[in-house]
Length: 292
Length: 324
Image 1 (spheres, each protein chain N blue to C red):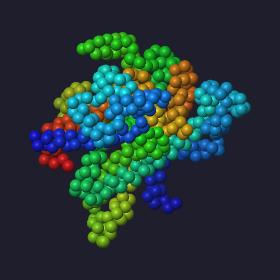
Image 2 (cartoon, rainbow over the protein chains, first blue to last red; image 1 turned 90 degrees about the horizontal axis):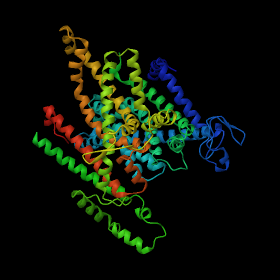
Image 3 (tube, rainbow over the protein chains, first blue to last red; image 1 turned 180 degrees about the vertical axis):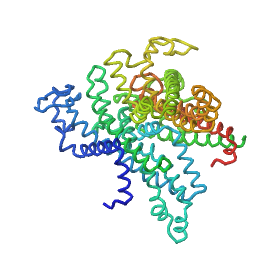
Image 4 (tube, each protein chain N blue to C red; image 1 turned 120 degrees about the vertical axis):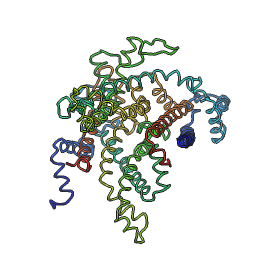
């Protein structure tokens, strides 16, 4: 790789923060585990034929009747928790990335167009977004999840609605600065369509701050999804994400069977904190105000 | 100034109206409440009577106008499930949520601000780093998970504190409060701690950032030159200068804590309005959902409006910049 390319320079700086590198490693490892879940997990947790009720609620290390060891114990249906967590991670990450990406595209486009057009359109769009930002994201997601009902796409719609405003505001801020620069005036002096100027000229220059928001928001949407699923407003039972695993184990925790809730929770926390640590480092590197 | 206030008030009314339409249409588009209200083996006659009694046979726009009309008179209808006026139901559950949120926000502020000032005053000390680590955890770890860990640690493993419900209550002004009895306080402690962690993290960050900035200003330099002790400088000058953003956030956070209370109340089976809304969502108790959402929206609009007006009163530049 060319050592002077912006990416190489960025990586050089990133590498110096050991915590961030470790966190990035953890994130990549978890993603790999989630991707490979069907190949490496000891059991297909959703094939009911695989479940033995005799093995239900066994503590970690229990050797099940099928002959393999449940390293993290089993849940109320006799499901191997390690397998359930791997599959749960798959669902949680998938939802987080899909919701984050849609919110990114929607918010960035809206914010950039608002900055590009200015005037009343800008004022109206930004007013709506400010208003929305003053409501807590969790409340918005809760209401929408309740209104739209259960399922993957209603949930994603709720997460996107709760989060696109952050992207829109960031994109608007960055695009307003870009809008006043000469290269945009130059582009406008040629007969280019507004769409082209916004997408090809302004938006690429707004990407760095948006990427920072994106890392944080993916972690947030994973956490939000888990919260909604925990409250029973997330995915249907056929697609148990980490939040639902935790919720299912909650009632057993009071009787001391901690592992059903605690291990999925640990997986969730490690994922969220690792993403946030990577995001923090990226933000510090991109934010010019923090440059020494 | 008066023009500004009137303009903002009108805006708030428009927003409230838009929200009422959204909430109404949204809520009434969910499922069929009749299926929840009566058993499937009820006769057709009972079914029709129930539909008529709740006005569910009317067209949607007519239901909305009726709803708006009742709203203005403060009548949110009757809960399908509890069979009592919704407003009464909400006011009955409100004190539990109020004492929980107030205690959480107060605790977070009283603890978070001094610790944040310390972390800003001595940014490199080990204690400051520990404070910041806790605040990062408070920010990134979901509330419900912290609640679970608290229950598991203090209620299940150690057995020190109860895991749910309000405990004994005592009456004050004709309302039942938990914080007046020792047993109630024990029940209040864990949920309040759970709810306050996020606010605590936020207060620490705010106070720390403010203190770091203020310590570099001339105010502090001159105060030091005048021979004031560091303690006096922190208490008399730094605290005062960072107080304005903290008070603002304190006010705004009181509102958003209500939203987070939904999660905490569910985990600790705290019988407040947060648990009420979750229960009413799962039973499709529409009048309760609508009333809760309208109430929260109203609360947020009032808070935002007062913040806007307070800022305009403090900063004349904002008054001339016409709000869009």
